[in-house]
Length: 122
Image (cartoon, rainbow, N blue to C red; front, side):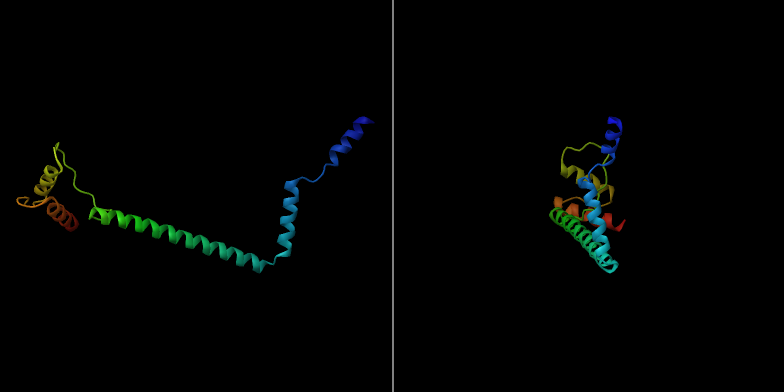
């Protein structure tokens, strides 16, 4: 008799918080029409699209600000030298000579600009 009473008490469990949440969600779905669901979905879709646009705009602005501070686009990659160099000037001279640029009586910035122009043409 005690075993039967125990089994019945197990079967008569109360509804927990997660079950109430599911019930409330189902009632809300029944109360809200399908038109409102599509409008809500459209709203969230537009919000996600605007977020992606803003994220891309911020990424481009960051890239542009970094390239302006260096004087070259972020996509610019200088040629690699295979010999050890002792200074930035020596590296610029080696690169300029490898590209056929006259490096005599030119400042570092002039050499960088000439190297950049030559690299853009190639």
